[in-house]
Image 1: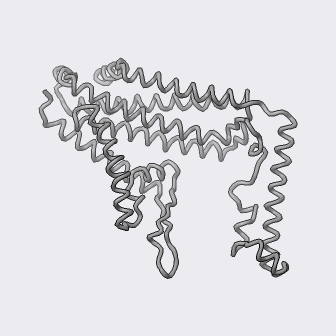
Image 2: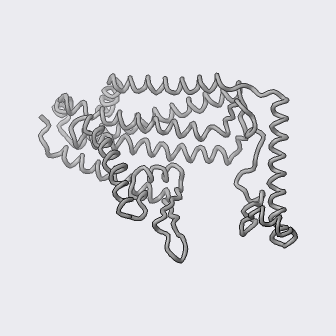
Image 3: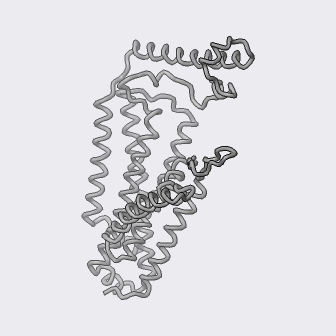
Length: 335
């Protein structure tokens, strides 16, 4: 416990960590202020007009579905049928089977609706926290290795793996606490904005369940990013090593290798990219398209990346790098 307490103090006292926390607050503050300034509480007239427009759109969908059914039954003239180009199955146009029908809030302009915007805001939050976790994780161990702080710590606690594990555990715990606190403050602030200068929208159980699931997946991604930065900086003995590795991967693999694979005709290029697996993990299921999978008998270019396979790839890569970091830290010269 004394070692963990000492590491928490070291982590909190780092100027870079403090700077990142300030930037985190500033980014959230600017986003909230911009949203507050661009939104207003809708008047009764605006709500009535939006409700009427939503009802008109629903009626139009119902009429289109009825027209498709009539066309399939042969009740339309040939000219009417040719101009409508209905799908093979009218079920695709059935309003009752649609995932979401038009609602009043869809037709309100300059009005912040929490139920509609919350998911997009949470994606922004997760992206910022992932960057925060990676940079803090890399700088936390990288600065100690570069300055000799780890050597001084080992004089007090001469167990390398214990010290490194304490650093990693402290980092992950601190990043998780900051992420949860930031999420509550961030979403709470926008909920208040919706109450004061906008509309809450439909906040039912399904909404909160979906938002909580997205937030949980985001926290896992933040933890993986922090551990990845920690591992890369440990292997490279410097914060810049982690930053350079990520930059090199993005340029060489995500851009360069993707282009080469597309030129030579490699199938399912996206499944070889970490960015695709990150998207699949956050969304839960990512449907992708590859025209090269089509053949003469028909086109089967669709393929899917699931959250399970994405977590296996992301977690496996991070775990392997962490194991490599611990193995090298145990044996190499630190001076």
